[in-house]
Image (cartoon, rainbow, N blue to C red; front, side, top):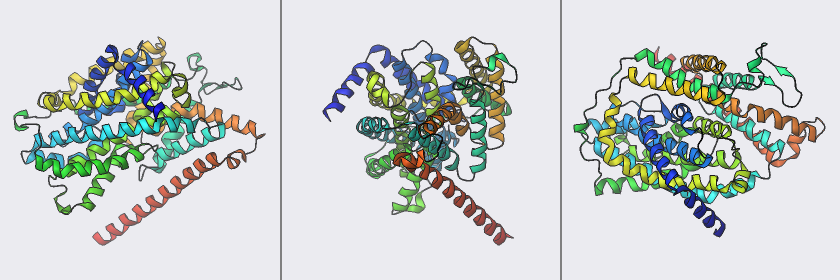
Amino acid sequence: MEAVFSNLMLGFQNALSLTNLVWVVIGSFLGTLVGMLPGVGPATGIAILIPVSYGMDPTTALITMCAIYYGAMFGGSIASIMINTPGDASSIVTCFDGFRMAQQGRAGAALATSAIASFIGGMIATVMVVLLAGPAASFALKFGPAEMFSLILFAMTAAITLAEGKLMRGLVALLIGLAIASIGIDGQSGVIRYTMGIEAMQDGIDFLVAIIGAYAISEVFNGYADMNTVYEIDTKKIGRVMITKEDWKKIWLPIVRSTPIAFFLGCLPGIGGSMTSLIAYTTERQLSDNPDNFGKGDIVGVAAPEAANNASSTASIIPMLAIGIPSSGTTAVMLGALMMLGVQPGPMLFEMRPEIAWGVIASMFIGNIVLVFMNMPMVPYIAKLLALPQKLLLPIIICLAFMGTYMMNYSAMDFFFLVFFGLVGYSMQKLDIPIPPLVLALILGDTLEKTFRQAMVEKSGSLAVFLDKPIALGFITLAVISVVYSLYQTRKSARARAVAEQNAG
């Protein structure tokens, strides 16, 4: 515990520098705006704003990206409550009761509840990060090639199976990502693969270009479909952004109860904020004395998912920092940006660069405080930005995406890749194919191939290497279980739909 305290003090010493404090505030504000704009979300926001991190100190860059991430968790609830349109998937559950409260003239109470629940959930989750990040990194130091391959395999299967009903679509996205990740000169054999004779592709396709295209440019293509959409916001009806003592008595226990559950779920690859929020909401509804009030403007229906949402996003930082495996699409984008800056997250980060790892963890405390004091008094003014028309927003996104892409490699060829992946991302959205598995494969595909080869060399080409190591065998077993369970759930849902259609007929 003494070592944890001294590391945390090192982190605060770094996080409290003037530069990092300024970027925590800027990142929190930008994240709130990004999270609030319908359809954009934290992953797209960070992808768009990657150019901002060029030339930054790696600690400052990661602190900024984390601030954008949990700022987006705060901001996503504003759109859910005010216009019944979630800023991103993790804020969907907040619509159920938040918008009803706004219709009943309690928008201020709903927004205050969201901010307070997010703050408490985020702070408790950050304390848990402090206690668990170090042990997680120490455990990860025991990983050899076989264990790392098995962990990445589990992360990829979890990413494609936890989206119910999208197993095959997720698999397609994963295979596309792995195919793209294999383009270029093989680092071990020197063989040129899948370049189609284009010299610029011999070094492979920069995964950050692909990420920016799949998220930011595809969002621009989507935006053209409703270019003239303008949301009408009457900020005068918000009232005071405060809660009463009676409200506090109702929400404090659901907040405290939802946070640890969401935290541990958030550490798992592929879970995401939307699932943890739904689990928290469903749990509180089952425990409630008046479950019929949920969906009709119950304040607990706002508090529980918002606390879970922020706890989950905070928890997702652990596997990224301690193991180097992203547990969500947003942390995958962050991982890619860090690798661009020359920082390799993983267990050695805590040993070799503790000022980065602990500086980020300390900044989470600061960021949550900044967000609660920023959001509660400024919500009426921030909400007005929901009326920003697409015709102003889309050119800004395009400008940042193209500028960032060019500054990465100073290659005009990257513009073609950017537009291509924008079309790929747009097509995937229209076909209801999830993008996170594609991003995960782009970032980890090379490591997956390399660790598999290293593990096979260790055992003279025998697959028994994965069975002889308990950790590797455990992750492979979990990967198989996740696939089998997903297939079972898919068949169960199909049968239920068939029965429902038969009864309706």
